[in-house]
Length: 301
Length: 301
Image 1 (spheres, rainbow over the protein chains, first blue to last red):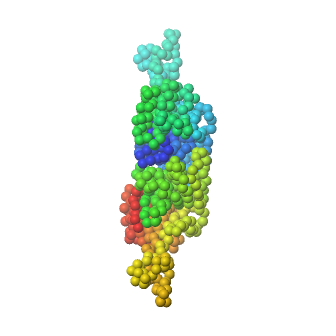
Image 2: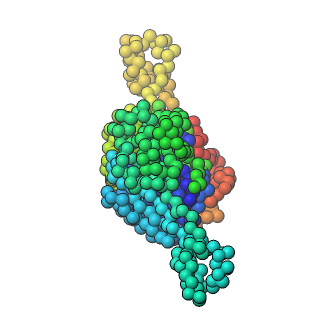
Image 3: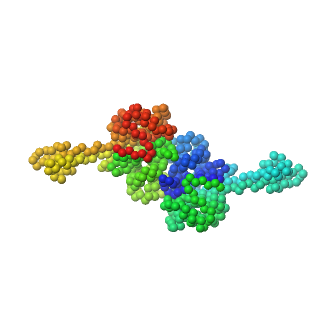
C-alpha cells in the first residue's frame, strides 16, 4: 500500500502548499481522495498517470477538498479518456459538476458515474476482489465522510515443500490456497495449516479529514495500520478547533491511541503555522508513532 | 496602464503553465480578466494584493477561463474581505457560484454582486470617473465576450507660463483645464489652446479570447493601443482552429492590421506547441508590432 500526499494544508492554496488531495495505491489500483484546487498540477508534478485514476472519493463540499474536481474532470475529457470515472461524495456534488458541464456545453466522452452519499452511518461504498472502501462519518460543519480502505484477505500461500512431500496433485493447489484440508488416497486427512502459510495481513488505511475530536470514530478505526487524521490546529488554538469543528494534533493522537492504530499521519495544517514539526511534537506526547504529511511526500506501508 | 499575465495557455493547467487570467491596472485600479484554475496562486506569485481586486471580468464559462473563480471568492472570505466584489460574466455564472457556496454552507461576509451578460452587441458594462469597460462580442463555441478597457480623457494641462503671463486668477484654472476660453478684463478673449496643453492620450486595451477569426470585431478595435488576441494555433492547424472556433497567429495579426492597433499581444497558446516564438514569427509576417504573452510577464504601456 502506497500513499502519496498531493496536498495537506487547510484553506487556501498558496505558492508552495496545496489543499487536500492524496493518492492511495492498493494492489496496483489508484484511488484519489479529495481534490482541492490545483490537484491536477500536483498529479503531474508527482508523475501520477491520469489514466490510472478511476475512482475519486470526496470527503465534503468545502472548497479546499473539491474545487479541483471539475478541472480534473475537464482535463480527462481533453485527454480523450474513455474509461468510466466513479465519483463518491456528498449529495449535491453531481448537481455542481453537471451544471458546470452544461453551461460550458462540454460533455464528457467517458461515463461519469456519481455515487452520492447521505448516510451518517459507516457504509460500504465500493468493493472488488482486492479492496473494500467504507465511509467514516466525521463531525464537521457540513456533511463529511472519511474513508476506510481495506485490502481483502489474499489467498493462503502454498507450502511448496510440504505439498511436494505428500505428492499432492496440482489440481488441488487452489483448494489448499482457499484454506481447505486435503484427504489423501490413503484416507489420511492433512490439515490445511500443514500445507500452506498464512497470507500477508491485509492492510487498512483510514482517512479522516475534516473532523472535530470524535470518539465515535474509535471502534471504526480499531487496529488500522495507518490513520491519516486532520490536525488543523495545535492545542494552543483548541478553542478555535472546537469552534470550527477541527482537531488539534493532541486530539488526533488521542484518537490514534484509543483506536490502537499502528501509525498516525497528521495533516490539514492551518496555514498560520510556519513549522509543522510542532504538530509531531505535540502528538508524540500522547502517541509514539507519528508521521507528518507533506505535499509531495510518499509513504509505503 | 499595466498588464500582468497570470496565465496565457489554453486548456489544462500544467506544472509550468497556467490557464487564462490577467490583471489590468488602470490609474491605480486593478481589474482581473478571467480566472482559470490556480489564478489565486498566480496572484500570490506575482505579488498582487488580493484586496485591490474589486472587479472580475469573465469572458466565458469554459473551465480554463473561470474554474479558479470559486476558489478566489472563498479565499477572499478567509481573508476577511468586507469590500464588495463585482463579477461580470455570462448568464449562469451566478448560479454556479451560489450553488457551491450554498452546498458548502459558506456565505461570503462581503457583498458578491453579479453582472450577468447576455447581449450579443458591444455594451458598456462599467464606468467610473477614470475608466470605461465595454464588452466585445466574440465568436466561440459558447457565449463569449472580450473586454475593452478605455481610460477616460484626463483634463487639459495648464500652461503655467501662459496663465501667469496673463495674470489669470486661480479660480479660473479649473475652467481652463476643462477646455474653456477666458475673457480678460480688457474684453480680450484668450483661446483655451493658448492657455493649456492637450492631456495625455487616453489608453485603450482590448482583450479578445476565445474567438474564431471575426472581422466584425475590427470596428470595435479600431486604433486601440494594445490588443490581446488569442492565437491558440499556428496556420498549420488552421482547420483545427476553424473547427474549435479559435484563431491562428496569422488571423490574430490580420485583425490587428485591419483594426490599425498599436501593439498586438498573442496568447492562449495550445499546449501542443513547445516553442511560442513560432507564433510571433507567423504573426509578424502580417503585422509588425507583435508581443508574446508569457505567464508572469508584465507589459507597461
